[in-house]
Length: 201
Image (cartoon, rainbow, N blue to C red; front, side, top):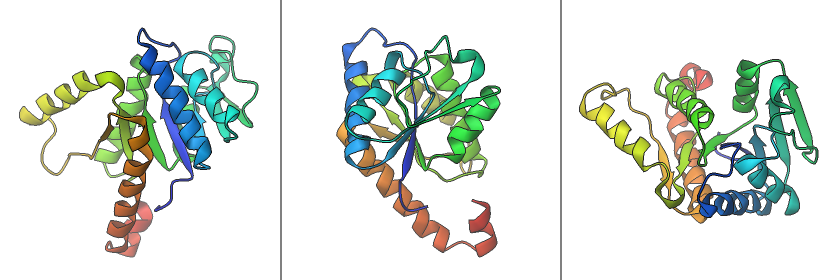
């Protein structure tokens, strides 16, 4: 997996209190479109979800929304997405988002965003995938999480050999270069693995 074709974006269904969050979401949607990279996201038309998806569409990008049926009304499923998949539940939603994506980016968000992000970190830690995971640290939003992760390492709950690389970008324009570099690095490492191990990853 050396090429980034689709990026999964986790983010809030609200706009947050800082205008920079919405601005960052719009800028990233535009960046994906201009680089001909598809957006895979939660399917809503409100908050940061709506901002990133609408921006991608406005700039000619491809958008794949994946939303559970019970959220289609609450999060106002985006009608303009080229592909909208309605799932039976959250588990199917997360599985399809994983399968359709080559990398993961977390914009600011709440508990749901954090849950989706941490699940990917856990899977990577357990060796279930090697797809890049990046935190878009808009105006320092994710700093408390980085502090918590450092605390987990210090207290040996994240032990050597069980760590996972978490990419960080303070600027929107740095996200894609970091994802591409990480994907290329992973591809090079996979070439050095035994074929049966590489296939499992």
